[in-house]
Every structure is written in C-alpha cells, then in structure tokens.
Image (cartoon, rainbow over all chains, first blue to last red; front, top):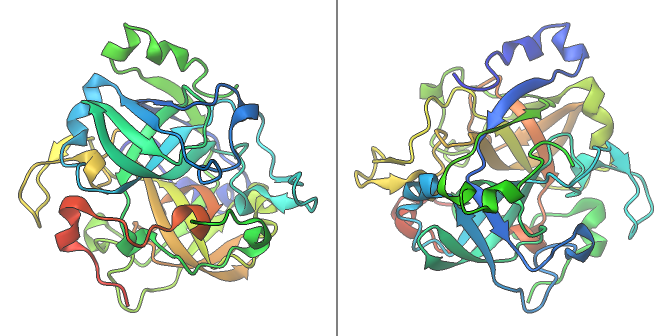
Length: 173
Length: 173
C-alpha cells in the first residue's frame, strides 16, 4: 500500500459528507519542453497549432530504464502537473462560451487535482531519455509525472459525443 | 503557483542528474465502485469483460458542483490513485509476454506515480454525484482524483500502433 492508504475512510457515513485532503508524494520523472513560455502563449489544445511544433519530454536519468520497449508505439499519453494553474474553481464560464460549466465537464487546468493529460504523437528519441512529441499544449518546463502507451483498443472512441463542447471542437485533418 | 513550485530546479545541471521527490497534496474527489474486491479479481483491462458491468463513480458532495454540464458527453477520462499497486518497478517481464519491458511502455499499476487512467462510457447519473460508468478495471473503493470529458478531436487515435502490445490487444466489438 502506498500513498492514500485508507480509501475506506471516504466511504464512511462521515467521510462521504466531507472533502478529505491526504498528502501523497509524487515523484517528478522529468519535464516537458514546449515553445510556449507563458500560459498566455499556450494554444487552446495541442491540435490547434498547424503544423504542430516538435516538443520534447526530458526523462530524468533515474527513470530512463522505464522507457524500454517504448519504440513502436505511435502515440502516448503523458500526464503532467499543472503547477501554474492557480486556484481551483469548481464552476466557471469559459470565455468562448459564456455559460457556467463544471470544471469536470472541461479540460481547464484549475482542477481540484491539477493533473494535465495529453494524447501525443511519439516521433522517437532525440537521444536516450529525450522523446520527440507533437500535440502538447502546456507551458515550457511543465513537470512530467507519467508516460503511458496509447492503446486504441481501450483509449480510442472516435465517435464519442462531446456535450456542450461539440460546438467548439478543433477540426481534425 | 501550487504544488510543485519550482520545476526550474529539475532543469539545472545537478537536477537533471538526480530524481527529485516533492510532496504535493492531492485531494481525493470521491471513489470508484466496481465488482472487483481484490487486485486478483480485476480484469486485464476495462474492455475485457463482456458485457462490461456497470460501475459507479461517487463524487464527494463538496465536488458535485464541478459536474455541471457533464450530461451530453458519451465518454469520460477518469484518473484515480492506484494505492494498492505496491512498490514501483521500472522494468519487469509481463506474464503474458516474458520479455523485459519498461513500465512506461506498459499500463501496469506499479508506476513511479501510480495514477490510473481509464476511458469509460458515461451512462448518466444514478443520482446527483453518482455516475454510471462502463469499462473500469480497478479494484472496488479506488480513490478518484479527476474526471475529464473525453474529446475525440484530441483524444481519439484509432489507427495508433501499439508497439510490443499489438499482439495482445483486446478485440473491439
């Protein structure tokens, strides 16, 4: 058992009535290099820039052995820590929409747990521990938490409906 | 700025040579109910059981306002804390394969940061704060960290190649 040890406490009658904060330790495994130096420069999503610029994931030497057999995956899921997201807001009105939306119905960074997620194209290694990626949208220097192989058998839902965001979808080439 | 405050330290010549542990606080936003009471009972992935059983995400009352406007999304991405994953291993030989693989080339739970991710079908609310989901594969009571809307415009790569995992892909209906 690691981290949040006793999830059962969340299930008690008392626990269900209150939010719980539990400190866990995350290990940064590296950082992301992108062309965007400030939040204001970042695109709305990684598919918006055309062509998508090459970005890099720098994996710290201690974690490089975990990259074995990553070749051959065309796409990856990267998780990162949105440390510049600011205070969490449960509801807000997106500037391009105007209606109040719950944060869990958006991909906004100011989440209770600001873990960012991008599905990216993996163009191989620039050198050991440095991955060439496209479709990132985060600010340069963002802390990398995890890399997972993208599996179309469980991750691809091309016909999914996008709810209120459907009207604002980024067209795909 | 929240959490990991100074990612710049990762970029220093010293920082790039060593792993860094930084304590950040994650807030459980609820928990997941599944039919699987032990790790041994869990399916290999959420698409393996046919039919996929109905699972639930229970969102703590404090976070329920964040669910506004979630209706209309057919699929969601859920992030959860794999607190029963055990000690992280950077390389291991999967029992169904036998060759050593880096953990970042797998979806195994024993990761440096054991954050689980599932793309799930969202079948609406059983009651406020309780979401009906299919395609979860985690153990009952798993701590919920985040819910994101699934956006095919940025998340769907149905033609992605699966590297060494291609031979073991779960067929889609």
